[in-house]
Image 1 (tube, one colour):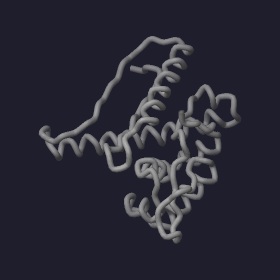
Image 2 (image 1 turned 90 degrees about the vertical axis):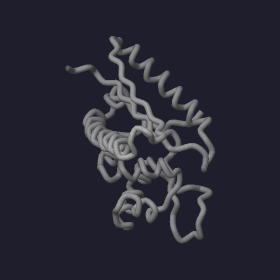
Image 3 (image 1 turned 135 degrees about the vertical axis):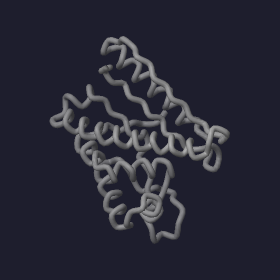
Image 4 (image 1 turned 30 degrees about the vertical axis):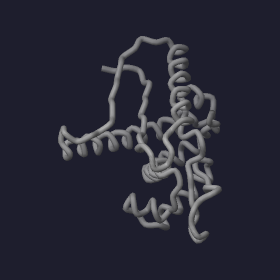
Length: 186
C-alpha cells in the first residue's frame, strides 16, 4: 500500500500557487518528467518551471526520480508517492492549517473546474460518436462527521487499491479522479 506523507501547512501554501498546481498535476500524469517537457506542455519558460519544481521539492511534494532515463544533463522529477491528500480536520490543529487548506482548496476548485471544462469541450468537438471513457457522479448524503471520516477512509482505500494495480506504462490511459466531500449548500 502506498505511503502517505503528511501534508504540511507550508506545503499546502506552496501548492496553492496555480502554476505549481498545474505542474504538480502534469508531473503526476507523466509519472516522470523534466522541466523542459513540462514547460513545453504547459506553455511556460523552462527556468520558471524549474524554479517551481524546486519549490515543490523543497516542501516534499515532488522528488528527483531515482532511475530516470536520460543522459544526465537534465533532472527528472516525480510526484512523491501517495499523491495529494489532506482533510480540514487534520489541518485544524496545525497553526495556519485552516487558512492554508482554504487557499489550496480555492486553487484546487479552480483547477478542477478548468479540467472539467476542457474535458467537456473536447467531448463536444469529438461528437457523441467518439470513444470516451469518463464518468460523473454526485450524491447528497446525510452523514455524521464520523460517517464522513469513514467514507473518506474507505474511498481513499479504494483509490490505494487501484493505484497498486494500475496499468503498466504504455497501457491504458491516465485519468484524474476528482472527489470532494463538502457540506451541501443550496
